[in-house]
Image (tube, rainbow over all chains, first blue to last red; front, top):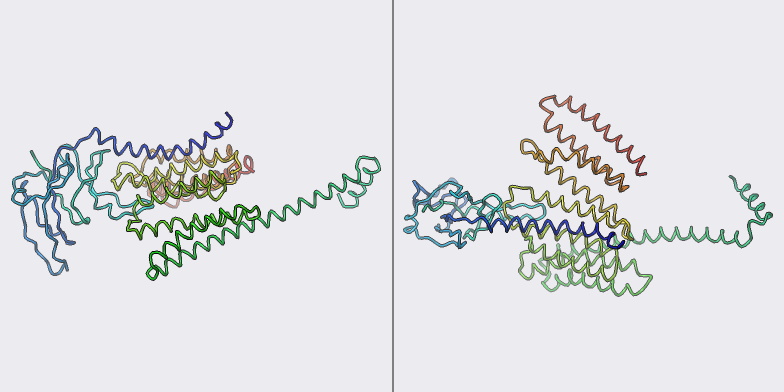
Length: 166
Length: 324
């Protein structure tokens, strides 16, 4: 009995980090059981350092723009721009030809009508700086956050165009 | 009492029959033995320090060798020089443990093995094409080393295994939680600071758990590290105006006074010193946040100075009355 009593502080000490890990897992995965995103969105990739994006949205419709290279900015030719349709329920990105993309009407607000927004990951942690986390995109609403499977290679490669209206 | 008085006293005790020749000689022999033991203990602790310093220098040498010759060495040599050295040192420790007079030297070899092991595993993973900068990789390395050290401690209860179990366990906790979070934007709560809070609390309670055991030597170090981690996290959670967190800003003084009170109960100077220091930091912070524009900076500095003098005196009084 004395031996058990002596071990209690050690058990308590070791329980604290275990409890923190369990709470972290719960706070990440439990909200996903109750909060379900429903509204899909469209995004484009293919931009250069000077943010000259090929696709923009005007009056809810996707417009294709020409790429203008300003020699003063010393920018390189941007990579090939592509459009993607993100299905939030299946969690997949599907490449979308421009002709099909023109059929959709988009809501360009940062937050969807059901309260979700797309945010970048957190790149810094006290010990582990992971710069690549910044271009990981997450779908977020209060405690819910889910990593998006997007075809994004670096943080300036992505442009959110809008939420798909029904 | 001078020597002559003592000798006269001994003579009178002998004449009264209260002290025999054997008792006198036994007392003399015992005093010689204990002073010899003191000298041996001092020599032994100096040797231990030199063993560990030597071990640290060996680790430094290996790291510099790998660092400066990285491009010239082939993969096999890199692994042998790092992981191979760690494994070799570990087995050398096991072999030397068979000899009673080589006990402390074993510790030095185990020490080198534990220091070099993370470097060895990272080098091996890097050569295997694994990205070693991620939290997942750090978690895996820390988990491997934690398991090795805990198993070693369970078999052979050496202090060196215990120390590295705590170190690798802490590393695993931070790495694994970062891995679970996976870059998620935890903007609603200060996750990093809460982890430090948990780590600090764990270290302090672990120090308390070791007090009645033969590992009580580690208690003061665990208390020191734990209280620094805990109070730093609690102070940072308070934030700074205009983004302050009122809950933590208001409870922090209570926390520091709680730590100072605990120093009396636990007879811990670390709690008293760091509780006092962090209370001073808090007073500085609050003065800088809220009193520089209203009362004027100069006036608030005067109040701050007197407050710090009061806190310092409180710490001195508590130490003198309850701890020393």
